[in-house]
Image 1 (cartoon, each protein chain N blue to C red):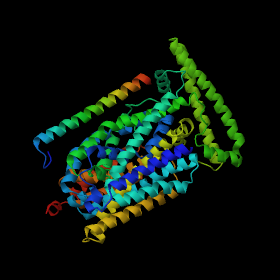
Image 2: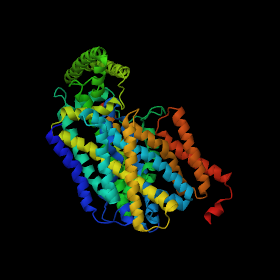
Image 3: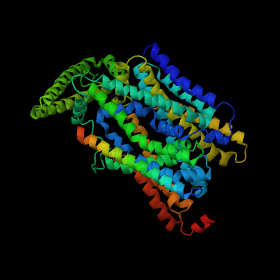
Image 4: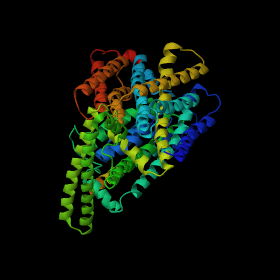
Amino acid sequence: MNIGESNSDARSWRKAYGLALSIFAMEVVLLYLFTVRFS
Amino acid sequence: MNRLDYLVLIATILAIPLYGLWRTRGSASLKQYLKGDASIQWATIGLSVLATQAGPITFLSMPGQAYESGIGFIQNYFGQPLALIVVCAVFVPIYQRLKVYTAYQYLGKRFDRKTQLLGAFLFLVQRGIAAGITIYAPAIVLSALVGWRLDLTIWLAGGLVIIYTVVGGTKIVSITQRYQMIVILVGMAIAFAVAVYRLSPDLSFEHTLSVAGKMGKLEAVDFSVDPHKRYTFWSGLIGGFFLALSYFGADQSQVQRYLAGGSLKESRLGLLFNAAVKVPLQFFILLLGAIVFMFYQFEKPPVYFNQPAYQRAMQNGYAPQLAALQTQFDDVFMQKRAAIRAISSASSADSSNERDAAMTTLRELETRARELRDRTKEVLQQAGVGPKSKESDYVFITFILQQMPHGLVGLLIAVILCATMSATAATLNALGSTTAIDFYRPLIRPNASDHHYVVAAKALTAAWGLIAIGVASFASLVENLIEAGNILGSVFYGSILGLFLAAFFIRRVTGSAVFFAAVLAQSLVFVLFATTNIGYLWYNFIGCAAVLVLATLLQQTIFRGTEAHAAA
């Protein structure tokens, strides 16, 4: 946790990072399926 | 280009800077000039970060890259979402808390003056050259194909940017980038739609993608572990992570964009927006290149897309050789078209044997077409008109000029110039700020007024603009434009990132150890670059790892016992 950041703020940001990671993982999976489908 | 195109082009590229100048009228304090103000929100930061990274090379070269080698380049961006999350969690809170103007001020606070100056110096060298490439890259292609004078194109793109960046500072850069990026996204979406619409009706869109895939253009993900392959999942994830971490965490041209809002929340949201949209955006730009490739399977392409160079070789007495190659190329094109139609018929009839046979023929013909293009390039070199940039850089702009309706041609040329202006503005803003804050203020005039430093930052921004135009005027590229920028970044970014990671994560290391470690690591990367042919993304990892290992070793040997002094 950073100075000036409350526990609830830190938790919210961790959720936001988790969401960003999930979106990226989904993008890679879709690209892989696209590769398999069209190669 | 006709009058309508010029009208759209001029209106687009002038309206945005004029609006920016109106929004930033009046005098600014040093803080406002270098960091903008609280009115800049996350959407503007997000688009500004996106525009700074994109640049003209993305829109000019990337479709050509996909046309030539397929969409595998997308993997270079796989490390970026992870890196952006680390920047949000580690870098941004520290920069915001310490209220620094430049990333290198943090190195000065954590270590010492010489380490701050080393980080700033590596940034200035790398970005000073890159700014020249950013201006030169579109200018050489536009001047060749549209017929504009090269020097005037460079001054048109560079001169306008210098004026508004010097006057408005960080705030005008953020505001103009927001609208320039909107123009870019709309323009590219329309180009994508038109390219799909112009595809041959002989094949459905799905069949078109299938044929493109069979011709090796749609391999987006490759899990190969061969280090000599330039684009793989692993090199993109690991090398791309270090490249992106250094670029977003330690390159002032980006740091200045996300510190512009003044609040931790706005900075983080702007960066997370980039983490989510970057990979899909790059995918669609690359897919556009693959679609243009399929378009030219039915519409006869020139044997060589850089037609001005081709015409000069014809005039230099090489017309017979080039005409013979063109005839062979036209013949191969007709056979390829017949093979694709055979694939379509076989697919409709569900005849896999016929489809496979036609596919094998098509691949052989594609290899033959490639050989003919290579031989044409050799003839051009013999004729003394060897092109200054890769042929693939001319593919997309040729498609725009020859296949798009009027008005849209002007808009898409404006897209390329908007991308040039937005990336150059961010770079000049950062170069001027870094020189003023990291060199001028501490070394030349330590105790001057706020106003004096604003004037100094403006003068230094203008000076860097003139240097960038100078580099652009004398530049002569040897490889693909997109590659030149990324290779240059990768050579320097590893060492710069190593300085910052040592500062964040190795508590006991001192300034002298990390300074000499960075000098040695940078020398190592130069040697590897000159003597090996490993994929360039790995330089980011090697440079960074070398700084961290050498700093630890130097601290425990030569600089042992200096920790207490440093802490005091």
